[in-house]
Amino acid sequence: MTERIPTATVARLPRYLRCLSDMAESTSTCSSEEIAVVAGVNAAQVRKDLSYLGSHGTRGVGYDIDELRSHIRKELGMLNDHPVVIIGAGNLGTALANYGGFENWGFEIEAIVDVDENKIGTSVGSLVVESLHRLTEIVNAKSIKIGIIATPPSAAQGAADRLMDAGIKSILNLAPTIIKPNDEVSVRRVDLSTELGILAYHLNRP
Amino acid sequence: MTERIPTATVARLPRYLRCLSDMAESTSTCSSEEIAVVAGVNAAQVRKDLSYLGSHGTRGVGYDIDELRSHIRKELGMLNDHPVVIIGAGNLGTALANYGGFENWGFEIEAIVDVDENKIGTSVGSLVVESLHRLTEIVNAKSIKIGIIATPPSAAQGAADRLMDAGIKSILNLAPTIIKPNDEVSVRRVDLSTELGILAYHLNRP
DNA sequence: TAGATTGTTAATCGATTAACAATC
DNA sequence: TAGATTGTTAATCGATTAACAATC
Image (cartoon, rainbow over all chains, first blue to last red; front, side, top):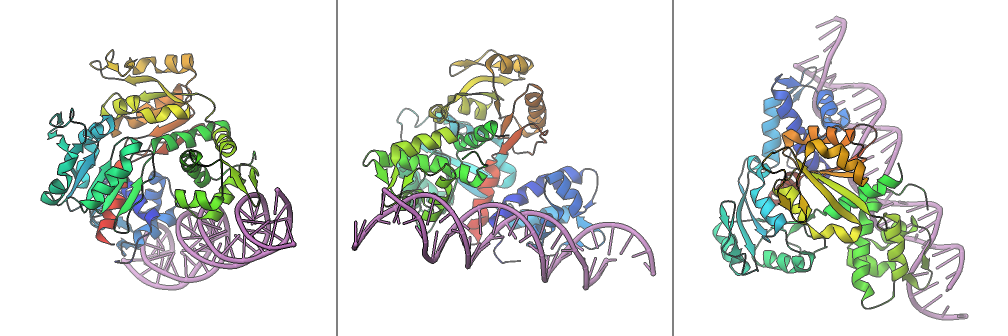
């Protein structure tokens, strides 16, 4: 139960959670096969993934949906609040600050910072853009552990360095560049150009 | 050369391209080891990946950077233009329409559509938001093969259905929900909540 | 008990990496 | 030729899946 869960499994758990939410409306119990069909994966995969959370199913019956959902939420840390800071108040940073999808996961955008004097002080949703210089102060005051980089690529490494200096432990990098983390932080990168590039590649070879 | 390249390799090629751009400023040739260090992967991996493009290196010497870059670009289809349509003119769709990172890949946002009467007709960058009803017409007129779904989750499947009806072949789904594709299209999903969720999970177990 | 379904083991598959012959 | 580095094979590693005993 406390052993390390493979990242591939962690990445699938939110998907199961969504399927379970949908299923909860019509039934209170479900089989791995049913989850598998809705989630579009193999039933053995579902059972294996769920077994990392401990044994919460009942042989011959299946899984109690509500119980399973709360186990997954607990495992993913969704029961806690996770304050987040965004670096970069451009289009993408602004979109994220206004993005509704984070809240029911416990992610709350607590601050958005930028270096541009013209942006500092302007409103983004319910937030006011702060100066990057105040990053450490803000991170400490709000106990922020997660930062999102939404800067242009040229500024991304600088942003990452500032985040690491400020004591951030996890970084989501949305800038199309590779940043060098130190040993203390985990980084994940989402590169929309690469995603489109993979689709474009498959366009040519069906 | 024309054999199928593994998706994992396709996903790394853009990264190599970026490293090569950086290196091109100081040298005209480089080894797999040098690329590996900058890209943060294993040198054998680099050679294996590049070997899918055919043998373009020189033993004892390394790779010609310019030549390798154009081989990768060609393989990824970056030499062609790829018109793209965005469904959803909310914060995320607007951010993408204004996102500069796509152009040098040959991706051009040709249209952005929405169902909201209040949004239709308004400007987003150099585009005007069009009605979703005009999707097929626009897709045909501009020979669009790639669509990006930037709607709320509840509208994502409908958006996907419209895209497939219109003859779109590749879909990038940014809505936090799973869409059911037909056999004709390839779909990739980017879910920022899940990415944050994975980071949050790692926060608790270092 | 008979039927259903889990949890887990073992088999399979695919991706990564080490090693090294080929060769510049 | 000696040194360097590719391209590729074989070994390793990890993830997925099939199979089935356990058991509700």
